[in-house]
Image (cartoon, rainbow, N blue to C red; front, side, top):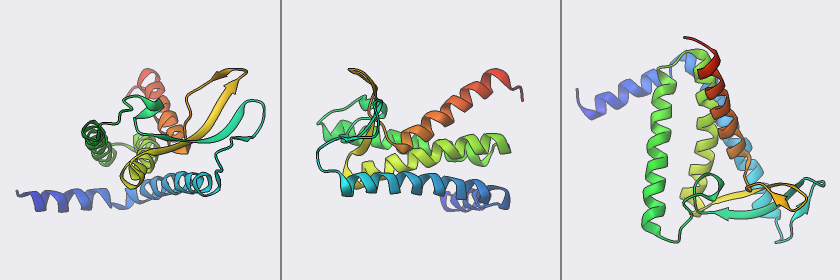
Length: 166
């Protein structure tokens, strides 16, 4: 079987009726993330917006991965990390296509967020993070809506792994 036949089989498997709902869910997550980031990018004026005593919106351009890890000015390392992220997303999509419904749901959450951040890496060469949670002078890592979905998906995946038997 050649590469093009493999791609066609994968596409047909991905677009099966049972996957359409989950693919729509991925798109909804992706667009929620895009809308939130566009709101911040288009309306941020270099001054944090104070939501309440624990939450600020402040635009930070993250050139690393989650929580700013692997931030560097090296375009080579940035591109290597971006390729690695793309490979992880493709693996998640493969696992999505071969999973049961509950796992498809979990993978959908993670893939939707990952695609949102990957889109930004390609489009802006950085990911806009803007949610600043804090208590007094302690600030958590600044994150975005995609990070929330990725984190929730991974948390559900871990909990499911410990407590649900296949």
